[in-house]
Image (cartoon, rainbow, N blue to C red):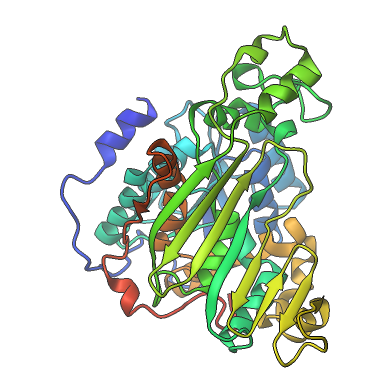
Length: 450
């Protein structure tokens, strides 16, 4: 069964109402340790396994991957941590279906190629498990609806593992926004500006050097991620920037996205990289990459704010998520690490260093757990995103980043493709909450718990 067939067979046959049933986890423990299964234990999946091993309240009862090296490396990490060996599911692409049936799992964490996120998430949710899925959660608009419909049918929660929502600076800015320090929010800027050329291409054996192979000859993400740049033209990876900004603007919780427009530059960077490092006669120099080097999307919000979202992964450049928060009384710009608050900053129209403000307004989650987060990847944010998932399971409540967030943040990708294909025309953004955004209250980052 391929992915398309699987989706067709697992999609709901009828529309689902907005009524959300209570969660009914199969044989889940009411308290105590959280029992997890991991689908996908490659480089990213193992990051989550390592964080789980730091938690005495988490049991790793099952892992699944079709790559024997990934399985063996993971088993070795678990053994060295003094934990019992988990059950292993590695008998083909559908063996994850057997993992999700286990009665000794409270939650399932998915870190696989994008096209498998939704089929695997639907199987786990239909099995009554809390489900966490890496970014982006979905590839198509229908997949976003499939996640929402399955949650509303089963009550099984789904969390998108957007770790940047927990970045220390953006959480401090969230605290400042909620305190009214920027006045009324009017605009936000964000994006994913990350030179991925050495991720999209490699030698086929490692990410070291300047290889130009991808697909079946590639290593790690080059096996599957690069093909999206061949086939698609849009913002392929929107959630790192958009997730934090959505919390700043209360999206799905008193506000919503209404429509977007997207534009794309010409595609040059990936072809040039191949020629520069593999020569003009290399077979991959003949590949036609559809993805423009820079994709810019403008999102309109119901409450009147605009968001500019930039996707730039094919160009030589320093890493930046380009965060900017603009309100009626001031602005914060991550690039340059500056802030300006009218009537507060000492010089009119001149920004000042943001560090004193970020330190003073450090979010209580970071104030409380910074020490525990020291062992985590990506500057500590991996600790917090796994903690959010685990604590939601322990408390039997919605995760702090929920299925509606997963659906709409990820949907920006196919919608941007559609806008570009239509000559950058406006495209409506569906309301995946079916109107509940009007009365939903914020749940992310409200305290020092999770």
